Amino acid sequence: MPNRAGRVRDSGQVMVLFVLLMVVLILFIGLGIDLGFSYITRANLSKAVDAAALLGASSLSGGTNNAQAVALSAFDLNYGVSSRDAADPHVDVQIFNDVNGNQVVHVTATVSINTFFIRVLPQWTTLEVGSDAEATRANVVMTLVLDCSGSMDQSRGAPPVGNGTGSGGGQYLPGAVTAFINNFDDKHDQAAVVSFSTIQSNAFYGGTQSQPKPTQPFKSQVIDAVNAFGWQGYTFSQGGLTNGLVMENNATIPANESVVKVVVFCTDGRANVIQDTFNCPPSTTMNYGGKDSCNGDGVHFFDSITGAPLPNCDVTVDGGVPPCCEGASGYPSSISSGSIQPFICTNVTAESQFRAVQVANEMRGDGIIVYSIGVGSGLTPDLGFLNFLQQVANDPALKGTPTHFDGEAVVANDPSQLSVVFQQIASKILFRLTK
Image 1 (cartoon, helix red, strand yellow):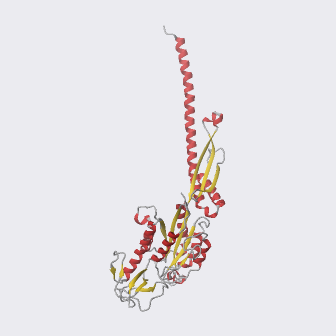
Image 2: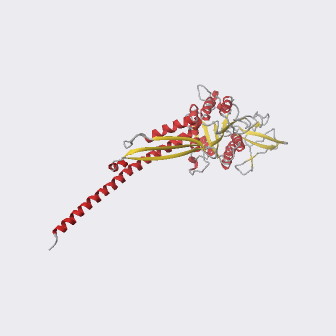
Image 3: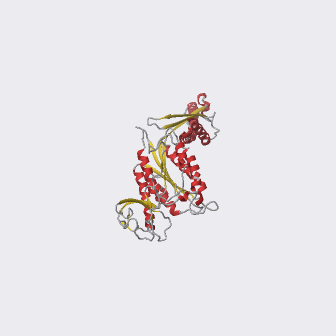
C-alpha cells in the first residue's frame, strides 16, 4: 500500500524548491530589467559625451574655458532628464595636447540610477553607469584665396545701390572674413590670405612679407589685409589658386604634428583669365581673356605683372591674332592636350575655368582640401557658376562618390548672406578637424 505520508513530504519539498526557484527567477528577471535600464542610460550618456567632446573640440579657438563651457552645455542638451537618475550626472571635461601637438577634449560622465527589482538587496538600490568620449582637434594650415575683381565693387551690385553689372560682394567680404577667421586659433593654427583679379601677384600673408606662407598669429593680419582690398580687374582664378597651392606647400609643420591643410576659395564669377608665354618675338608672358559673356568680339590682353591692358593687343574678332604679338597664332589649350587653339572668346573662358579646376585637383593630390564660396548677383541661382565651384571643391554633390579630400561648394545668391555661407564652411572645416 503506497505511503501517503511520503508523498506529502515529497510534495512539500517540491513546493519549497518551486518557491525558491521562482525567487531566483524573479531576481534574474529583475536583474535583466535593471541592467536593461542601465544600458539605456549608458546609451544616452554615450550620445551626450560624444556631442560634448565634438562641440568642445570645435570651440577650442575661444580658449579652454570656453571649450569646457560649450562641452558641458552640449552634454546637458543631449542627455536631458531621466526619472531613473538617483542624482544629477557628474561630468568632467579635460583638455590637453597629445603627442602630435593637437588639442584633445576628453569628457567623462557618470550617473547613479535607481533600481526597481534588485533593490531588495541593500547594496543594489542604485547602479552606477558611466561613459567617456575623446575628440582630437587637429591643427589647420589654411589659405584664403579671395577674389578682388571689379565686379565685387559695391557700385556694381544690385540696384538701387549699384548698377547691376556685378555682385557688389566686396561690401560684405571683410565682415564675413572677420567672423570666419575668428573661428580658428592664433596659437595652434596657421593661416594666410591671397587675393587675385587680373593677375595673381596680389598676396598678403598671415605673418610678414618675408614669410610667404601660412603663419601664426594671423587673425589681425588677415582681417587688416581684407579690409584694405580694392576692387578692380578681371578674374584670374587659376592664378589665385596657384598662389594658394604654393602657400600651403611652403607651410612649416613641426615634426610629429598632424595638420589638416585647407584652401578656401571665394569668387563672384567664373574664371575668365589665363596666362601663357608667347613668341612675339621675343618671349613674352601675357594674361588674356577677361570675358564671362562672349559675342564673338575677341579677347583682351593684359600685362602679367601690373594687370594693365596691353596697348594695341586685343583680339577684336574671334579667331584673330593680337597685333602686339604677331607670333601668337593661338594659345596652347590644356583642354586639348596642349594643341594650339585660335583666340576665340568662349574657348578662352572655358580654358580658364578648366585650368582653375586643374590647380584645385593638384591641391587635392598634395593632400589639401578645397572649399569654394560663390558670391551671387541676385536671388536666382546661376547653376553654371555653381557647377564650376563644385568642380573646384570636388564637391560630392556633383559626382556622388566621396573621397578623402573632397570639399564643398556654397553660394550666397544674396551677397548680404556672405557671412552666413562663410560660417557654414567654417563649421565644415571645424568638424573635419575634430575626430
